Image: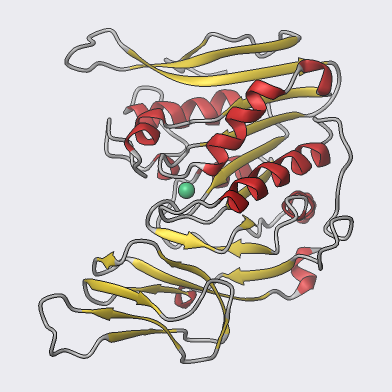
Amino acid sequence: MSDTLMHATVDFDQPGKQQGHLAVPYSHNLGGWANLQIPVTVLVNGEGPTVLLLAGNHGDEYPGQIAILKLGRELEASQIRGRLIMIPILNPPASRAGTRLSPLDGQNLNRSFPGKAEGSVSDKIAHYLTNVLFPMSEYVIDLHTGGRSTDFYPCAHMHLVPDREQRRRMVAGTLAYNTDLAFLYADIAGTGLLPVEAENQGKVVITTEMGGAESLPARLNRLSQEGLRNVLIHTGVLEGDFKTREDLGLPPTRWVQSLDRDDYRFAPESGIYESLVDLGDEVEDGQAVGQIHFLERPDREPVPIVALRAGILLGDRGPSVCSQGDCVAVIAHDVDPSILE
Ligand SMILES: [Zn+2]
């Protein structure tokens, strides 16, 4: 067990449905003995897996938060086999502010793992997940989008974990989302990710990148919600009919990967980014996928951002304004199927 300073108002072992919160102690100028309250719903009913369902790790990524808020209202314990723990908004201050980072400590929660019991608010949340919630879970589902900075072709995604049995189970869980694309990604922007901590504990980790930028059309919310229900049925925690893509009249999921640093294209200069390729479109080796214009230099030719290898455009810059070093494009390539077995 852990030395966490956090406190849950729900009992994770109590049969039935409970809604409460996780309290994170912190002080602010008008609240000396305040706590941040993270909403949690727990459904417990007999034998079955424990599934931990998370969204709002990054505040500005809303389809997963909406999907879990809805499930938290709709589901009853009688529909569950085992235990379903739902945290729709892991990072409420960031969600309220529409930001990726916590306004309370400036941290990226998804770079704060394994966390610290007595660290910042983000450190405390990460520590609680690492030491209390992950150990009791068989599945950890963490729902993302590209946030405001990046628009992703909507996909479920995963790391290529070294343990082949864990990998096989993660592949099956990822496919259960029934997205057009499933994506193998690399950590090109630091360590301390939530999924990596859960993977290191041997969990079956299922994650998404459901679009992003500021525009979140209805179809994205539908895909987030319908895919998530199917994933929960796949784990065995939720009753219902499991659907494959074939059942839905869709072609098989296409697996793509961006495992090399060169697959992630960064702005060499600050400026205004123009996308030249639509998300999901095929690109040639050396093709410009976008270009950067210069607000203060109308005489300058725009600087092209090129794909260094042929593939498809999986991620595209969200806001037009970009700063030097921002990731403006992600190019993905087809996967050798043998690595998924
Ligand atoms: Zn995210």
